[in-house]
Length: 490
Image 1 (cartoon, rainbow, N blue to C red):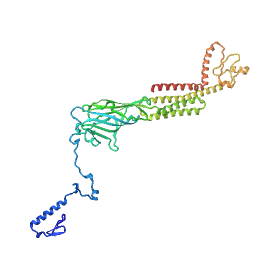
Image 2 (image 1 turned 90 degrees about the vertical axis):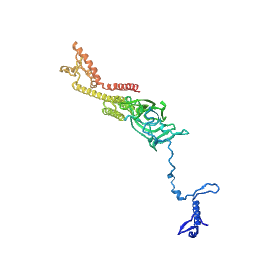
Image 3 (image 1 turned 60 degrees about the horizontal axis):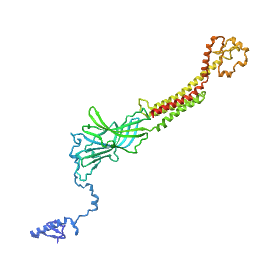
Image 4 (image 1 turned 180 degrees about the vertical axis):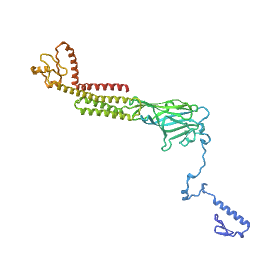
């Protein structure tokens, strides 16, 4: 018997199993039958075997080395059928090109209001921007009416609205860990296009009531290329199209209101465009500025009033106190203006600080006036004492003297004048008494003039009275100013 699977020609003989058959001595018909028999055995050995009772194919088991080298990702399964047929259409054109304007609905969810900058007059906001439109070129058959969701890679192959932020300074789409873009396509061709954006936009602020102010800012959306004849941009659900996170808060502002509006914007070179507005109102918290600006300024003004209770002869104490308060007020004004834009109008905080600065400066001028009048008084008294070593006058006449001088005859007549009528040195320091002879009726007019001069002289002598009046006038004036200020700006 011949074994199968081991036939090979060797020098004109056939080897079958362990036997070597000499085919040259066999008849032609026998050789043909033998050849066909070996061919059938060879074919049967190549076919897969079936299990004896189940009838299943018994595949050869791969070796361990075959398992290690097999890469299933490189096994081709064939190209699946594309449902969207993106390559069959020209998506450089808008849907329904040449027809009516395509409506594009928009809704926004504000995630956070990151910062408000008074110096740059802008704000930074993070939001989810969603677009809704219909593109029949993206319709696909579906029995379950379920949508298909894609990431940002498909956005580059289809048409999407070209919405941009008007008056924006910086903006970007978040890309951690991948581009934050979502595209959802429904079987009837409706499309939802969503992205997560952070934008920094300009906000025109009015600081005339700063820091007792409220600011209204807006984020504006508009199509860049398509006019209202090609693209109709609108809020999808009216006022409900804008949603905000309840946890949104700012350190310096209280967010009072979010609302939406829309209008047409005209450009002379291109035409009319639909523009959407996200408006929000901010009210500034005043407590921070009360602690950092108003209270220190008020304390400096009150500190300047302490000099009114210091003796006018203590020059170093009153001068150093006045200079310290003036410099402190200058520092406060400089610090406030450093964090504010250089506007050309007066702010509410400027009015308060500069009025406080004037009060502090006037307290320094008040001491300068007191010191000058005191020095002048002392100088005049010294001159009078030098000119009037004795008191001139006769006992039998009412005498008064203007310039403190006396004639030689009057001086000689003092020999018989009683000593108790002559004023002591201490009394002459408290008040100056001069004698003028009233020998005739024509001297009455001169007497009235001397009485007025005596009243003015007493005012100069009592220079500390200016400090007494300042102790009342300065606080009363500053309290009155505060009442007017807070009633107008608050």
